[in-house]
Length: 201
Image (cartoon, rainbow, N blue to C red):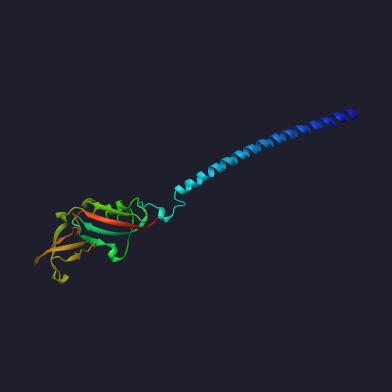
């Protein structure tokens, strides 16, 4: 009986030792895997953060570059090739706000601010095709003269029913000749543009 008990006890000790040995190796293996995973996560965390930053999560307004859809505010001074000034937001004391790429300003103005940062000052010369287009005879036409429309004179600027400004070129007893070309049509324009603010989304 003692011999059997001894053998059973020895077998139990052997099984217990084997189990402990097996548990120890498993723990070691899991520790190694955990360490590798942790190390891998530690290595990947900065990359993920950097990518998030590149996507704009940590961008500040001063670091934005103007792109389509952004609301920008600018000051500008516009001159003709002869050096004469035709417009200036600075003299009015009010910046011009507009959304890039939505047609709120002439094409050359949109293009000039794309890629600009707050604080940038850009000087750009625009051909008529990027400004108010070429002067066209098709935009000159006659309308019936109506004495009830009030006092009008050649050189006056009046507005059509659709809101377009037109220039009076000639007045007769029967007709009024109007020019619907923009006053700067056919002119190359130079703008000095200072970007004051950029707002995204």
